Image 1 (spheres, rainbow, N blue to C red):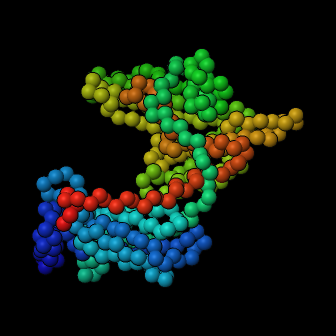
Image 2: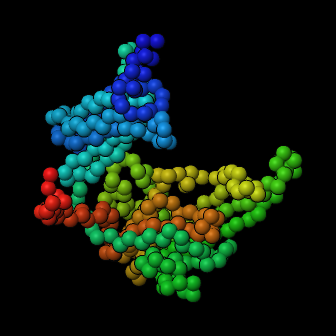
Image 3: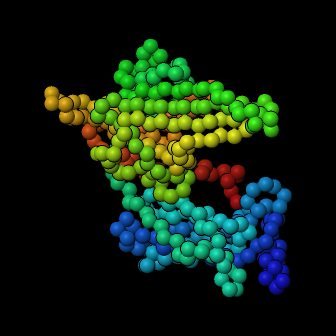
Length: 339
C-alpha cells in the first residue's frame, strides 16, 4: 500500500495529467565503438513517460540528458508510468543510435529497471562514403498480372513497352488467385472470401538479391553495410500471402514467410558484364530500403525504395556524410525581437 501511495503522489506532483501507476525508474547504458572501446562524452537523451489522462498517447514526465564517463557509462533516472523508456545516443563523427529500454524488472525497493541490466550500445564511425543514386517509387503499379515484367533499376521504371526502362535488371510478377473457402468455415462466417497473393522476382545470371535485417526506426542510423558482400545473392525471391475478405474489408492475412517483417531490407547486385570466358567483370551494388511487397489497397502495386552505387564494381554502400550546417544568420534587430 505504501508503494502504491508513493506512486500516486509522484504522479500528482509531476504536474502532468497522467493515467496509471507512476514509479521511479533507472536505466544504465554503456556506449562502445566498433572495436569494443568505451566512448567518453557520448550524449544520451532519454524520455521517462506515462499514459496521458486526457488525450490518447504518452506524456513525458522526465526528459533526462547525460554524457558517458571515461568507461562509456551513464545512469539515467526518472519517473515512469510506461514499460518502455525511448533513448538516443549521439556523438560527433558517429552514427546516431536509437533504442528502447524495457522496464521489465524491479529492485527490492520497487525501482523499475531493465531486467537485462546495463544496456550496451555500439556507435559506428562515419566514413567518407559515396553519392548514392536513390529511387523512391511508393506506388509502382504492375502493368499486368500473371506475367513477368522487366524493371530497369537505373531508369526506375518498367522496360518498354510498359515504361521507359531499357534493361531488365530484374523481372517481377504478381498474381491474385481466388480460393475456395471450406464449407465448415462458411457456415460459421457466411460471405467470407479468400484469395492468394503471390509476388515473384527473378534476376539474370550474375545478379541477385539477399535479405538484410535493419529496423527503420531503431538501432543505428547506419542501416546498410559499408560494403556490399561479394557472395550470398540468390536469383529468385518469392513472397506469398492468403487474404480473408468480408463485406467490411480484410478479416485476416496469413503469410508463408517472414519477408513482411518491418526490419526486412535487401541487398541487390545487378547489371553484370561478362568477359569472353563468362566471368563477371563489372556489376552494380545497391540496397532496397524496406520490403518488396504488393498491396491491394494501392491498386495492386509494388512498393519500392532503393539506391545503388553508380560506379560499376564498387561495393561501397555507405552514403557520403551530409555537409556541416551553416551558421544561422542573426535575427534582424527591431521591436519584435527585443525583450
